[in-house]
Image 1 (tube, rainbow, N blue to C red):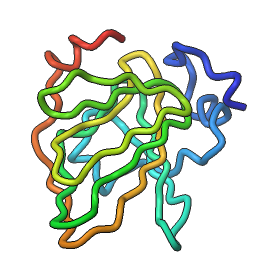
Image 2 (image 1 turned 120 degrees about the horizontal axis):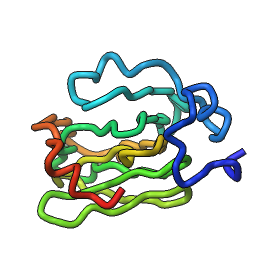
Image 3 (image 1 turned 120 degrees about the vertical axis):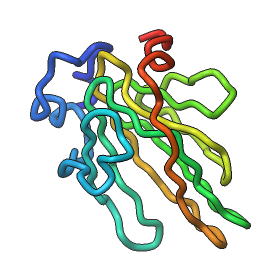
Image 4 (image 1 turned 90 degrees about the vertical axis):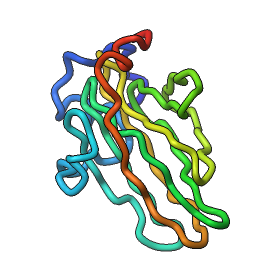
Length: 151
């Protein structure tokens, strides 16, 4: 039902937005809430071979800057499956994400991702296997910086 997705889906309720994407929204992402500005939801899609999750962000929600560390391999891959959002690496311009976009995040790169201010956003998150992997959560993406993005 992705074809029902509109460029501005802010007016949609959580239940209405859930009908526009092919993966479940999941439950409130309470375990990681301290690393997000706004409400996110998490649904594990697979726990074998390559575990991955659907992460959904309410309009304006974004995660903090963070780094997926690894001494070899590692990193993360994001596949947008609904709505419209942003991905940004430290020191680089933000990249708009819409359904079908794929972002490859190398290990040890500081970045954040989240919804556009006026739109729900969902992406699949794949953690890439590596050695000595860990995740370091950093500062929030402040409102002043986030507000400069073309929404």
